[in-house]
Each structure stands twice: as structure tokens, then as C-alpha cells.
Length: 273
Image (tube, rainbow, N blue to C red):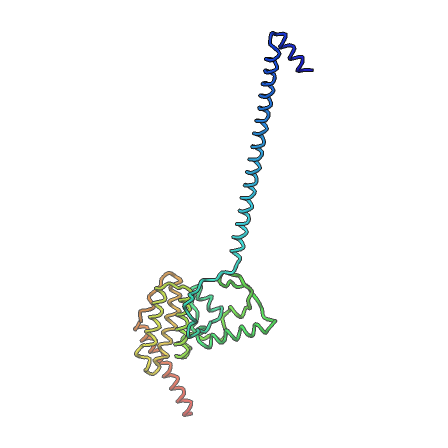
């Protein structure tokens, strides 16, 4: 009825019926097309928003998964690569106690006894006793960057440890070799490694070794200088341990001779009384 009234109005205004109908049809078509275009635009906009939201959610999910993967990778045990052409070494170096290893990693002084066969056997014995003894005291220790619960006995100084000058020559010779190997494994500066290697070489090849009390004097020199070297390094006043100090050696040699002479005299007095 509304269209009929509008049509009559147009005809009364002088328009023909056919023209009026054509105008109405074109107007209706344009209005429909406009609505279709608006609807199409809305559909495309809604689809675009849905796609953007989906892509954003996908990116967030991938980022979360990547973060979870990275966290999982961090927690995985790490292992270095190996040379598939290299076999096991022919000789296995005895492993010292965790106490000695930690000292080495911290580049601190530690008695050579811990690297001797006796020291390494003592470490194995302590570990074996700790495994069997349920009453052992435990404490936290940082091992290779990981905090672990270990027996106190495994990372404290051994009561059996000897000072360097109290070692036998055989113990000293074996221990210094193991010591040099372990400081290399722990990544000590090359300069320090070379100085220590020269230090031990000069002692073990010293011409006075075959003299009476020669080895005893050389062991005393080695023990005294090795400890002093670490003490002075801690004060940032390090000296070259690879330079043999003959004056110090002669002083120590005199002390050893006097001590041994006094022992000999006292022994003669005891035997003659």
C-alpha cells in the first residue's frame, strides 16, 4: 500500500507509470546493493578479526610452547660431545676426594697428599663407608654448578692428610703428576700450569737429590714454596714459582743438616748411656 501511494504521487506529478516503476525498481536495486555491500564488508571485517585473533592466539601459544621447551632444555642434563675416533686412555689417573677437587676448582692451595695413591684410596674408603653407614651427617655442596646433598666426610679435610714435606719421595713424585693433570682439567691458566710444571721438574731433577738428606731438603723446599706461592697469589703479589731460589734452598738445607745432626747426637747419647 505504501508503494502504491508513492506511485500515485509520482504519476500525479506528471511521471508516466513505466518511468515511475523503473525509478522505483532502480532505487530498490541500489538500496539492496548498498545493504549487500555493507553486509559483505561486515562479513569480511568479522572474518579478518577472527583470523587476526586466531593468529594472535597461535603466536601466543607458540611463544608459550617455546618458553616451556627452553625451560625443559635448561633442566636437561648436559653432556659434551666426544671424538668417535679416540679410545679410552691406557692409564686411569686415581681420583682425589671432593674436598681436593673443590680446592683445585677454586684455585686454592691443597696438600699434594690428596693426589697421592694413599690420598685417593682414603677418598674411596670414605665414600664406601658413607654408603654403608646410615648415621653419616649430610650437608649441601655445589658440584659442577649443581647443589647436591653429600656426606660431610666427602668434602672436608682428611685427618690423614700429610704436609708436602712429610711425604715420601715416591708419594711426592706420584702426587705432583696427578696434581698437574687435575689443574689442567680444571682449566687453570696456562701460565700458572707451566710455572708449576717447571717448579716440580727442577725439584725432581735437582742434583742434590742423591746427597744425604737431599730429598728431605728438596721436599721441605717444595712444601714451603708451594704454600707461599698460593698465599702471595691471594694477595695479588705472586712470584714465579718456576725460578729455583738457591739461597732459600741452602738455608733450608742447613736447617735439615742441623736437625739430623742433633738427632744423631741424641741417639748416640741414648745408646751410650
